[in-house]
Length: 147
Image: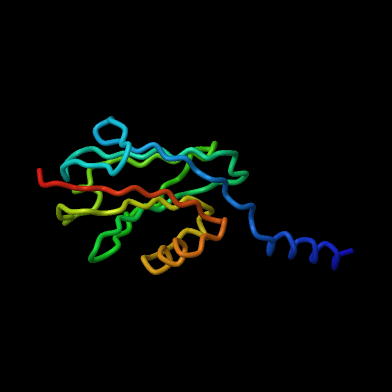
């Protein structure tokens, strides 16, 4: 009986969690929705709200990346999603990513179980090239102007 319990426990522990649902994203600059690329000065307030198409079934978190021509930068904090799976991210680019220069970027939000979130630019690029179902990606072009 003990062996059966250990086997069931091992199978449960090794079983991958359910895949995350697709996410819809609402992007805005200073509260005005972005129909295409989001544009504004480095000091404007940018926001994104991601809503799952269905319940994620287990807690999810998010990481935010700013992809530029020269480098990919990760926002320092991991974002916790609300119990219903909704993720909110808001701030001013210059404050969120210190030292940021004006230019064209892509803001990428990765949502999934914490252990599957990309840790760096290489993992993000691999996930973008080959989605795996454990992480949902939302992205939008940003054009940041000087103040």
